[in-house]
Image 1 (cartoon, one colour):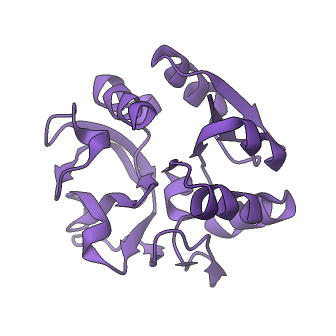
Image 2: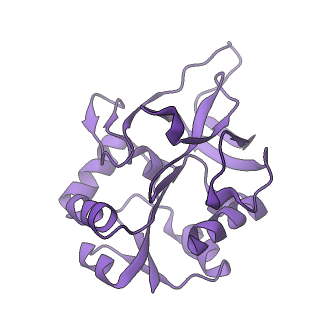
Image 3: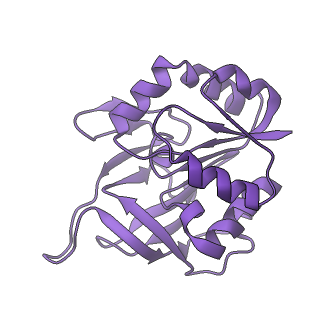
Length: 204
């Protein structure tokens, strides 16, 4: 069975495709929600704003299809960057927008803790593991990953936090609940640790 990369017009599909193929995945990249029927895992990449992301998903018919795949069929799903944020219940970027609600929580703007802290958060930073997870089985704690974002995910339940990253104090950089995973960083741009994480998702 193949991995479906959801194309809703807001993903960095080229680098995601290349990294997954290097990890040995059989891929389908599709704009059609019906493509879920032939796949065993879902990946929701994304760059851009939360309201635009949800609008694109709704217009293309992905929201209902994703809920059916994840909640009814139990398919594993990985959200990357904006894709992680869209897993939340609500986003507060440019107003208030309802998210997919797959992992209860909100998405809000990073708040600088010092004058020299810049927003957006761009570049390499550490992942501090808060609990064990299959996706991090082969990833050493405090490995560096590549980030580009101005907003962050705040889960309702602390147990859904897998890892945090030191910036603006600290923010949640990886979440997981049942068969749904989200990473704020870009594993496809994060060299060996990123590939190890993607391989962990493919094996799970």
